Length: 552
Image (cartoon, rainbow, N blue to C red; front, side, top):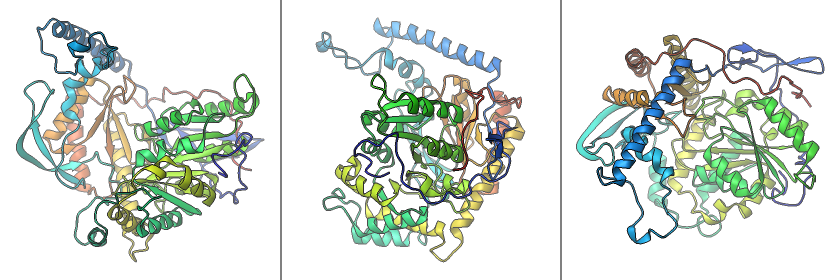
């Protein structure tokens, strides 16, 4: 992306990319278990491997009971608010002071209604404090409440050896063995913990330079830049790439950091249906034909924002098709590989490696070190002129404290292991073990009759629970059986799609997975969670047309 913040570039005029790799060879393309072939000019194009994603529809009775459950909870919430307003029940939420009764309210009462009356009833399932390394197992501090989850007290007891199927420790690098952390310990002794400065002042260490060179080598691009916070890598860099007069086309399920960055940019934002190429092409075509509203001038840039793996759905981006569309309509592509880097592809290089694509077909490669690398921070990678531009204009680069040297060394040792630069095959073995664990866990859950979302290769595995009462019961019972899991509900998901989210790790043993599956099977029978009827997805394609190209 030449001069990302510079003058007008008609509809995102692109660089002359290197020759496209053959990422769309013959093969079957599946969506929700149904084979779909894409044709263009009489030719049939395929993915180079089966692309199977499942989004089974919610059973009607489960949807009805879910809405009913929220409705009853809402009615009781209004009743309890009535009791609180009249002093019959104590209100533990933040309220306006009497001295400020004539002020504009600082706390919007209705906005807190859900938190006050619904979330608090099941709050004990979140923010659980752990007191060990978040490896395949961890230790949880036991806590109790005597006021219905408004406050908690620690009992002093530690629940030990809880099987961890909730952390993003995909390759198992969140570890504390002396042998594995030798280099990190040495760097800690030499550099200390903090940097106390930004990159442009006194915070640019040789370790950061080494890391950036290694990231560029790992991804197969010209240059890379690292940041101390993964969230800020998106939210603070997207505004540096686009601005007023630019158009952002964002997947409807993109992460909050992407959404915030898009809003801060002041560019026009339009969303397309999740992973729906017909919806995306419709927006691209309209953008090229009609240009900007009112003036009808051409957009300065068109930027497509997508993720490699969507962390709530477990789905994988249809990268070959998106690259074909962005080339056809001369748009830019920004790819967030927070969850896919390290966890996908035969070499762990993310979704680009997974599909066998050319990394230069993606204009901006973004990823984080918080998951597969067991560290913190994020990166932006691509062409050298892109990275040089961001070093000057990125808010995260200019104002934020730079990444500490021990964190950088942890990333370096993990990345070298994945690349085989440590002289072992340990990294490749971790990648292969993660893929094996993912396929096994998904297969067993499907056989048990649970509704599972996402791609069969995705290590993020959502299990649909639907009813809010079952969300709470599922997490509580699993913790009692020494299994730690993440449960998610409204507003983080659609109101009838509350779920548990399992994250696979290469450090999970077969015995651990079988233990978890056994307990899930029993709880599924107890709570009647086996909703699957193996139906086709209720998410139809927006359009029937498939007029996009898979070749130049």
